Amino acid sequence: MYKNPHSVLVVIFCYSTQRVLMLQRQDDPTFWQSVTGSLALNESPRETAIREVKEEVGIDIQSESLALFDCEERIAFEIFPHFRYKYAPNVTHCLEHWFLLGLAEERIPHLTEHVAFQWLPADQAAILTKSWNNRALIEKYLVKQPLDSGILQRITNEYNYLIKKEIENGRS
Image (cartoon, rainbow, N blue to C red; front, side, top):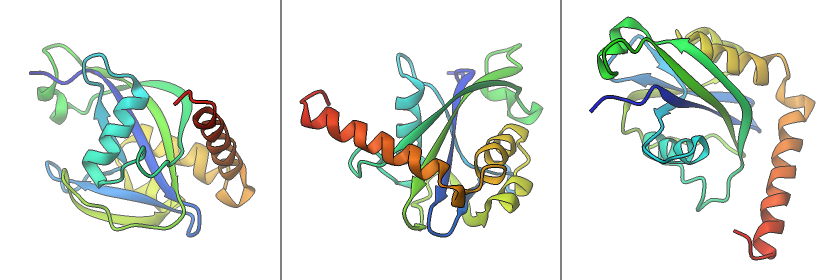
């Protein structure tokens, strides 16, 4: 079965250290990236992001009540030629949905699809990845708008407050 050319990119960062989690691919050890994955049938981008984070690094966003921030950005990118065999013939581009996941502390991820990980300052993480779209998300949200500006923390606090209110009102 071919991969769906609609995917998610989830950059995981740590508030306290202001570093980004980077993962080394099994199928290309020179390729470092954030969490990625294709949408399953009838799955929303948010559901895909939650599933992929749990599958790839063992973080259960729902059970831990973590805030997954939807950047509300979708970008189209050309699939690297050496990864195209995973897609239907003549599929050359993918539409990617961007997310951020902030953690209070760095964690040792439970790797299932990658061979190694690193927590790096955002600017170094952006340089490490070969993926221009992964680099663009990191630079836009974590380098050009540094975490100490409080922007992401305020967004996360607001999101958590809204979720708490929904739960209190029985709308979860």
